[in-house]
Length: 68
Ligand SMILES: [Cu+2]
Image 1 (cartoon, helix red, strand yellow):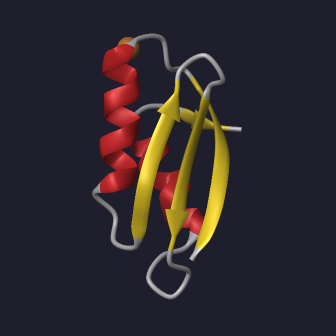
Image 2 (cartoon, helix red, strand yellow; image 1 turned 30 degrees about the horizontal axis):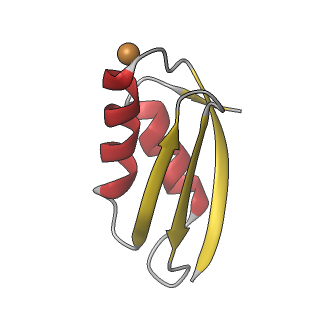
């Protein structure tokens, strides 16, 4: 299990925070998802056997936000 931190652009309110949170949480192999609106970031733990970073990035982008 590794900890990751991604910068996410486009979040402006608590609804956005929830959308990003859910997009990452619903993926297999992600845990302890925390979105920080002020820092424009999402941190999470990921089991690299079950999930990969590219899929997480795509899930966030599919939710309507940009991973930078
Ligand atoms: Cu919002």
